[in-house]
Image 1 (tube, rainbow, N blue to C red):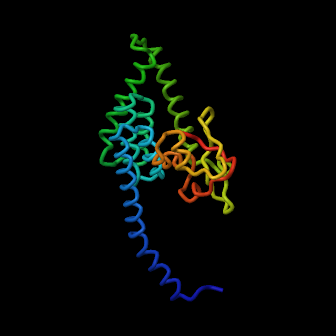
Image 2: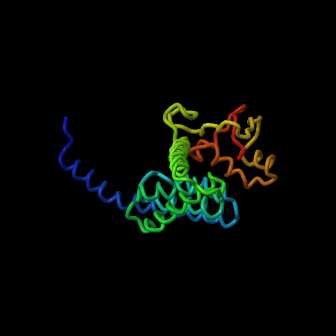
Image 3: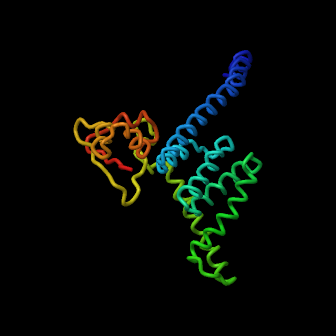
Length: 226
């Protein structure tokens, strides 16, 4: 049975009104996340800033600026040209005509030179060696991109909730872990490892896809301690 024409028109009108509002809400959350990441970066919490920047990425042009800022973190703060190359390249891929496109292309070229120099340990390169190192660079960039995708794994890559949604992120090989004991909370675990219960949020971000999932700690559950 087809719905009444009036009901369809009302639904479409509601969708049209919601879309700009929903976009504004999304933009607000995105800029709030950038501000939080910038704050951590200013406090030299590079790993924390990276996690927050990455949490805002959704593969769209709207969040491309996070890739650009991550590129600078790796290039300027961590001196890791491979990570910088990845994020400047991703920025250009999702926002080729964005406001930082020119700068991203410039940093991309500079990063390739720095990476080649790093891989060759400063020694003069022959044409053959340069070609070989460039190929290795491409392979490393591909590997890095594949590793980044672990952040949002396919079904079965994390711990599923009753509703079927992924709740806990996969534990990286070799990571420091903690098994939840009776009565423990993220705050008490943060106090144990960092002597600072305010670091509970770092543990939450390292382990869970949502704040709601983080509230449901289970006895014996294994957590990454970043």
